[in-house]
Image (tube, rainbow, N blue to C red; front, side):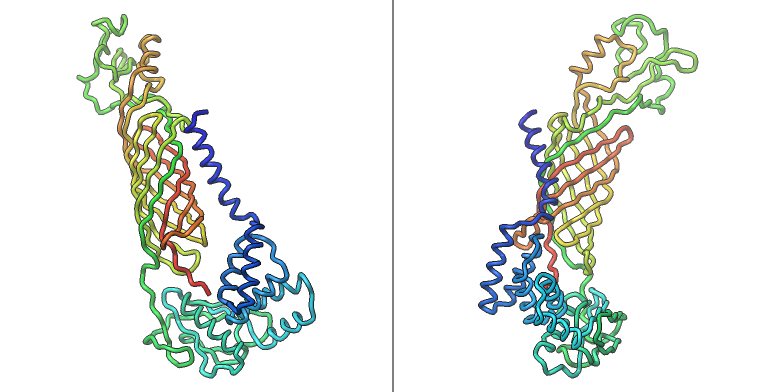
Length: 440
């Protein structure tokens, strides 16, 4: 195996393993974060505890009682009542305690579960004219208001009673395990400020959620199968069809196809003839043709509700070293960005140009075996083709770089000109715009 092939194989193996690694428990990271959470909790740095708790969940490890307990405490201090309830419930399942059971019972008695389904592009404020006196309950409402302002929707626990108001909907919260659903209509009215006043209080969002450049560089494999049979130039006039007896060797002056390498000896209208054909290279084996892949373009996000969606447009250049082929394509894709993942798919249009060695098996039929073998081993077949196709990619964010998200991405592409198919797969690394998601 060549050095290039070993490098490509290792790169593809890395790309295959990277998403799997994302779902494996990182025990060393869990221990580190657990220590940081404990230290931050001693300093009452609850925002820091909450941030580290989120990182702890992303380790995909099983949490211990202490981590759930400190996570519940941070949620309580930030007004995230439902998250507090879930974490206390998880801690209770690990180590049942009377104090935890009592706290869970009090939460169920004093809070209700509410889901406000709004519009991320036209965000309405959550209002309550008379705020409760208890600090924990006030924090719970204030947190819900910040979520509504950041996302347009809310799902969590709110203090019982009311009335609450969201745009044109007024409701009261009731205790119990059932979820109370509030669907926000398209209200109208000027934007107001404050969380306790009246008014519809809509905050209109722009059409574009995120926008920025994207760039990738990588490697992969490229291949193409030759046409199964000759492609006749059927628009050739009769006078271009050389007719005559098929005798002798190609070097004989009377050979009807002499001087016309792009010809096929055949029978037409009862006579032997040379029909001009389009000469084509032989098969280009995909895994014998490594390539470099360079992509640049832009991405625009058009939705606000997860999973965020948008569109992307790119220009791509590939250089196939084994066959000295070049491919340039433009790609328009729909993009979906759920969490750290990125999926893109859409049509392409491109040009393939270059030189390959050896022709398809049906080229030069009728010639001597020696001549055909020489053509296969020595003759170069320059060519040019253009056509449409389809491409798709799946990536995972591995780091953040100055407002961008760094990705490792697997991609595949297919293209067809009027004669043959081209296809390829590969791995690439690059950057895409970071989505500024609300972090409550």
